[in-house]
Image (cartoon, rainbow, N blue to C red; front, side):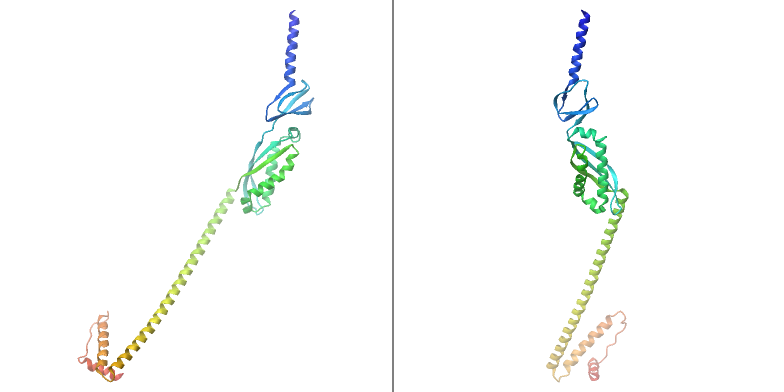
Length: 283
């Protein structure tokens, strides 16, 4: 009796184990790759699936959600022999799990390496300034270059983004020195232009002042001429007004001489009208 119970129990356990191995519940966002006797047989979609126990086995569980691959930083040499540091991030999605697991040993490492080598090739054909300012161009070229390659592995490239693309430490120092030299050169040019403009304005000022002085002298000469003509017309043949005018000029001249720093003693003539008449006689 007990032996029969043991047999029934063993059969019940065997049935449970068989059912457990034959029924597979695949969660949403995954696909399972099934092998039959060591060979690829089918791919299980999310939900309830039935396989043959002890013959079929789940070999790989592959996610169908987008995968983010961080591409490590690397040194890249541009066409003009400048060294820059570049890294990227790729967003992929596995369309055919069986191709991803059987077509390449490790699709993550394969895609990372492919992105790195392609990125080096693209930047290597660009100058430093173009590489630093053309992220969109590099991104588009990179996506087009690797999309066909990874499609053979049943993987689609959703997008790829350039995270950082910066000059190396040595190159950045050289660029800073170059920028400082350029700023110093511009400052020197600006200063020289300022000095030049100042000199031009100063020369123009002197020229204008000289022109104005000359015009003033002409005006004064004409005024003096007019005054003499008016005095001559007024006095006619009379002598005393002329003597008075010349005496006034003579006294003012002596006054200026007496105020000069070198003037010590000024002697006035006893007969000023006679002295003036004497000058008139010489004239």
